[in-house]
Amino acid sequence: MAPRSFALVVLASIALAACNSPTAPRLLPATVVVTPGSGTPPSIAASVAGDTVVVTGWIGVNVPCFEFSATASPRRDSLVVTLIATRVGGVCTQNTAVVSYVITVREVPAGTWQLHLVYDGGQSPTGTPVALDTQITVR
Image (tube, rainbow, N blue to C red; front, side, top):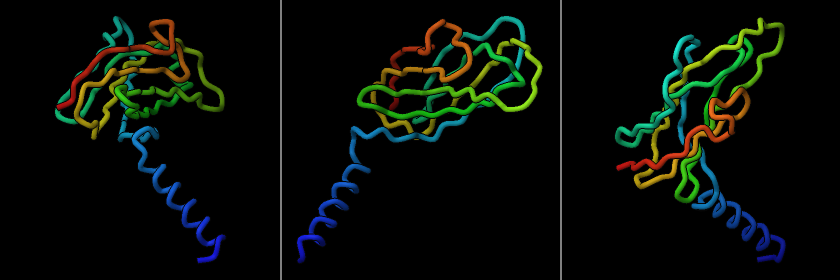
């Protein structure tokens, strides 16, 4: 085998190994449903059913000006769930309001996890980007 071909095989092997690395973050299937509302905001909480983690809570934003998405990735002994508020372009009415959300994360590996709910954009109800830091057990 020529030196150049050998180098390409080694690089390809390293790249494939990195894709399956336990330390490389991978995304779990996550969905979010938001409901604009008023009144008393719900508590921020997490629950587990099988391999599914459900995070409920609220965030204060300009309702018509944001779209929401969520990501989730296990990292060592932590499960980082991120609620992303993306500003929508164009003209929108500035209405500060409470938006309730339900984030569903599926295919969470069994184990005890430190769940970190992080806000990316919008206003954190707790005043910090980490809205929830709690321990969960997935069986």
